[in-house]
Amino acid sequence: MPTDAHCERIIGSIRREALDHVLILNEAQARRILAAYQRHYNGHRPHQARNQLPPSPREHPAAVQDLDRRRILRSRTLGGLINEYRYAA
Image (cartoon, rainbow, N blue to C red; front, top):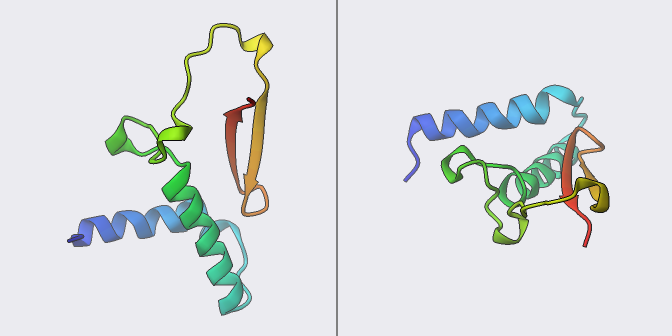
């Protein structure tokens, strides 16, 4: 069961990382923004409690020997407000 501190922490993260950077015009837009942030938060964003690893096991960083031979792909979330990076296969 979440405590007040947990709720305050997630609300603060949502405001700092998403809502403080966009102008919300209506409820539908707010729902789209929050859904996109939720996907990012639960699937890609590093979490302090997991040693800065994202929740999804397939997103764990791989050991890289030669950075010149690996391509890095960028995914833009919330119109580029949040950028996610991963190695190309």
